[in-house]
Amino acid sequence: MGCFPCFGDSNKRSNKKINTTHNQHNDQADDDARHSEIVKTTPKETQKKEESKNAVVVQQLETDQSFGGHGEMEEIKAKPFTFDEMEYATENFKPDHFLGEGGFGKVFKGKLRDTSQVVAIKRLDRNGTQGIREFVVEVMTLGLVDHPNLVKLIGFCAEGDQRLLVYEFMPLGSLEDHLHDPSRKSLDWNTRMKIAAGAARGLEYLHDKMNPPVIYRDLKCSNILLGEDYHPKLSDFGLAKVGPTGDNTHVSTRVMGTYGYCAPDYAMTGQLTFKSDIYSFGVVLLEIITGRKAIDNTKSAKEQNLVAWARPLFKDRKKFHQMVDPLLQGHYPVRGLYQALAISAMCVQEEPSMRPLVADVVTALTYLASQIYDPQIHPVQNC
Ligand SMILES: Nc1ncnc2c1ncn2[C@@H]1O[C@H](COP(=O)(O)OP(=O)(O)OP(=O)(O)O)[C@@H](O)[C@H]1O
Ligand SMILES: [Mg+2]
Image 1 (tube, rainbow, N blue to C red):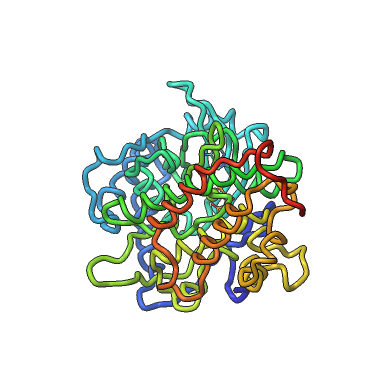
Image 2: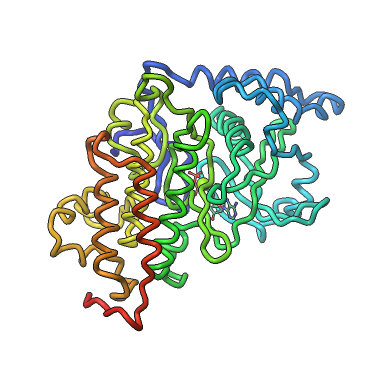
């Protein structure tokens, strides 16, 4: 999938954002329209007009029809903040508070002035219309959702050309950090299955419980954040898209997402389906099991793409043990490993219709997570 132009590269990570046009319906036009609307109605010149900046985005959200025309602001729980409050919370975006950086900007830890609540504040880069659209979608989507496996959006700030999102703070950081940062203690098997099952439940809420249903589009390890006791929550709904309605099976869109996680069918055709998310979920599950990155440019050519590396191994049970993260040091259940690999293999099938529904993935992983592995009782595998 190396044929896509990239944007929003982070120095920290090898995962690259994809943004490619396959245009039956090109939503760039929508983005530009939205952007120009915001720019047009948020003049910088006078202080008085500055005060209405948050209201402009709120108005934008009220009029945006892409989420089924939710016009009632009382449904959007996110609170507007001033930029001054954001500066206070982060002590002027002090480097000490820096948490990480993604495709759309830097994230800082902060403490809100009025409630003393500890939060994570994402300051969107000021260049590019993309960020503006993400901003509107993020406020709309996260402002509406309420689920234990989805990160809560507490508020937002839209002052002048500043765009910030205020989230609940997730104290254990991202799954990516835990899987791929060698300075961290390795996750045990039970924790890995708990995270996989929780992330699947978050996705199930978006696909099956939200009305209209939402396709996540950017499921990956850095977007699975961890709370106390490794409770997982999905974050970053900036790329989310309302799913197909009626008899339609897909939504046509620019191809967006992250290298290594993007379903091949979606990458080739631009046709986004719920099964595109299932593919990404399969890649995440494979990372959880193997401890390998979705794309790892430090490995030999054959091993750089995780799914390409795993496909031939999926076919041979004898090779399953070679796939397990060596950091587990043999502490995993054999049956559990087979089952987890089987779920992942089903999710990353080339043919989208062969991939399971999220509800089935949730059922399977909830069962797997309930089968607690105890190294005192169960044999340690010879790796
Ligand atoms: N709510 C949060 N609580 C704690 N840390 C967070 C929170 N949100 C983000 N982070 C940290 O900031 C880092 C960057 O997040 P960000 O979402 O900007 O980038 P990303 O997920 O790596 O890439 P992308 O832009 O594609 O989502 C995360 O990896 C995580 O460590
Ligand atoms: Mg993210």
